[in-house]
Length: 196
Image (cartoon, rainbow, N blue to C red; front, side, top):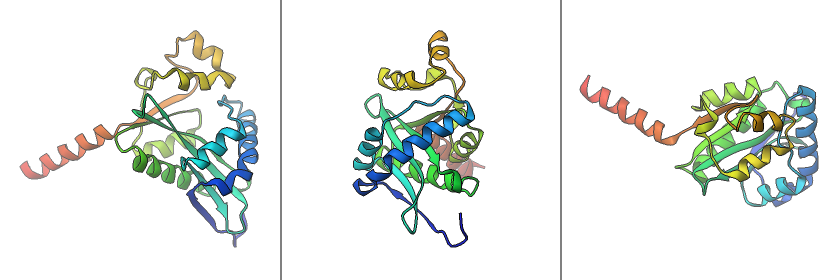
């Protein structure tokens, strides 16, 4: 990244479709380089997320792709996942992933204010960002039971491990943000302020 590069992070749209192939190829390449599993998505899937306004993209001022993340809903909107976080190798280590995660989290809260937001990750950096946003590590049993979500793991190199453990755990860490807990915490804080 040059000193003159500025990065804009915004909700993706139809016009961003030409970046879909590059995004999905980088997702797969990055997972392979890390030796971790990832549910592979075709470019058409990413384009659909862009068209639905359920994705965030980061671009330079001269329209080079920098990063991406998208929203998936499960269990009739009870659960939301922020998935597919990827940053172009030239822009890693510069805070872009954190900024994208913050924006996709904000978009998820705007679109689905009562949904539990969860993620499965093997990346320490993502775990750290999730913790800063209020996610907590949870067991797989606290995640969606939606079969379509778990079917997405079939393309992961660790799918057999997940299946052999009856979807109770795998190599990914499950993390969850529950807005109901946030409300309870605020109410508890208000109670303490009034009575202490």
